[in-house]
Length: 193
Image 1 (cartoon, rainbow, N blue to C red):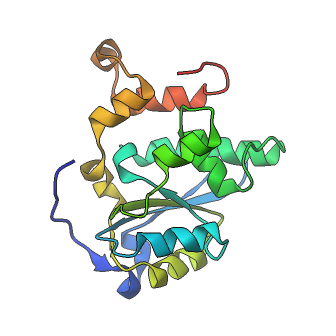
Image 2: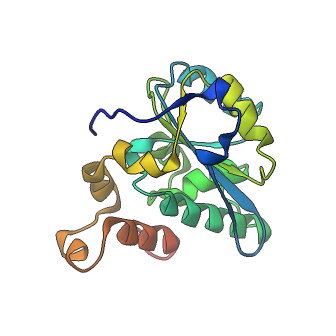
Image 3: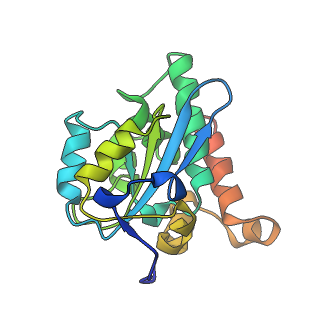
């Protein structure tokens, strides 16, 4: 993962956040909002706020996310699990993290795809925050820079993603990394990676 110089706004000064975040309406009900943060200096505090239930969001490790479509697929799946009352985890945001992972163990999924205390970048997914209330709360809490979601690939580790999802060179000859990863997310319950 290369160091990058990215246009940034301190999260607490974000004001009009619409240029840096993406909110998507998911078919079947629900919305998901994505935001990307760089130079986060208080990740431990942010994680604690989520674990204590003060902020409801999925805090994702940027090195394991190459494209927001991965997270959108996991969010769609998590919302389906919620609608059908088949959630594996305790809340919709932890369900996104679990659905994102090819691993069957919840704690392994959290460890591999959730941010750690020492991480300084963060990709977040927030469900049903159409008015950006939770996002505004996060911006107040995070000591770092809110950057454009379009910059996410600059923070990803393709080698680690390929290894985690067991993506082969043959697959990449006929498709791309995002397609391979999304396919695995979609069939997690059917096929173990």
